[in-house]
Length: 404
Image (cartoon, rainbow, N blue to C red; front, side, top):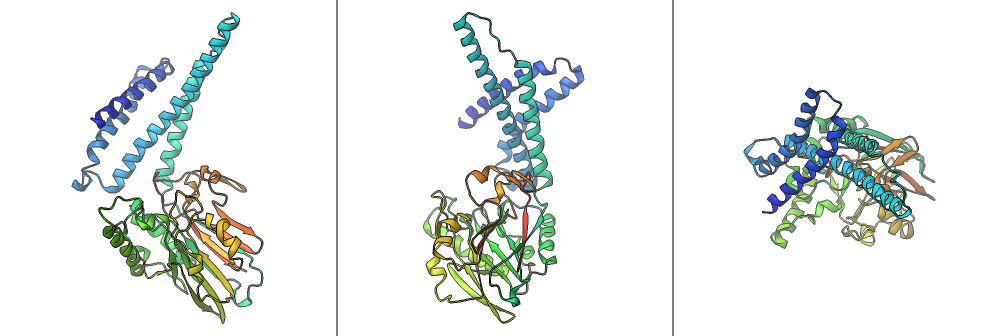
């Protein structure tokens, strides 16, 4: 019954949008009108097909990759139609207000721009649909190497030129193209890094998402190994588990996946490595967020136990809000903190110094390198994606940080 109500509402919505579109097509050829009508109504039909196919992926009607693209294309179409409806609603509201004012003062309604507003509305809808479709088909595995030179005060000569490669937010449950992923792995290994750091969200929800991907991510190499931490998605908090034991089993499996990858997972703890006679401390804290909607398992006091002095102190912490909320206030000896979590919003603008994304209104530090005094924070744009299976303007990132 709920599906039936939803279908009826969507069909009414589609009919409304289509009827507003008809006047724009009056001057078109009959053939073009027929083609446009068929294309338009294919999406509601596809949505009905999606509801049927959703429970039959196990029967190989569609591969997982095909299903994700199919589902996302329908989602993008309805987002575009919703934007059209919003513009039309604004136009209707303006017209209504103009009509009421005109009647109050006894004049004719002065506002009549319905034709132009229709064109504007459908132009916006078509543009958004095209951009999101391009971002999904072209940019999901279009990895980009972002390089930064980080000038750390008092850094020993032996550590100058030390190269760190950072990746974050793999979200294995969203990945389907191993060939595409391999391109990213090759870019990482081509850097011949001294150290690789992974800053959380290996999966979307469950450890099983890494099945089939361990071999490919295990290829990541560096002189001093790979160190990792957990992100908010790695705890299974977004799954309705039948009992606590199932949740704990999944968490143990997540830890085992890190071990299988050959990564040193830091759970509120630290390690020291020696580089050309200098000591580098790597601190890994569990998920710590200043935002109440996200879990907080991080314990910095525990993470620095026995740390003592070091020539360089690196902190891996998934959520960048940890920096202002705790690190800058209480741990001023941390030279560089590396985070992820924001994905750069997966949608935004990067043109030189001009950087914007919806997520920038929620996170003060949301993308790239930040400095306060002698301390640095780097926020990685993410290796994978979540929700919308694509990226627009904000490409998946491999970070290369060279210290000097």
